[in-house]
Image (tube, rainbow, N blue to C red; front, side, top):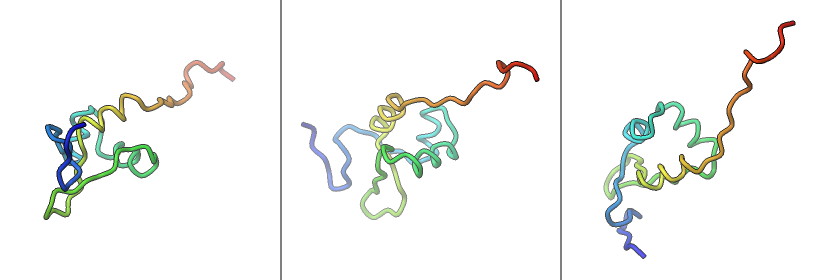
Length: 82
């Protein structure tokens, strides 16, 4: 099992802020913020020692985002005209 340092980071993992995470996943910061606040399965934020900024493990966040259940909205263009 990989060793973790005092920030909880696994050796060899990359920590990124919310903007960098959004860019890596191809989504907006606002969407990630919504997921972060509404989905308890969203990976927990970490902080580098001596910092006040939240960061996330990129590999962990990618695994979460790839595995999450998609809930697309209903297509209104397919409904019969009234």
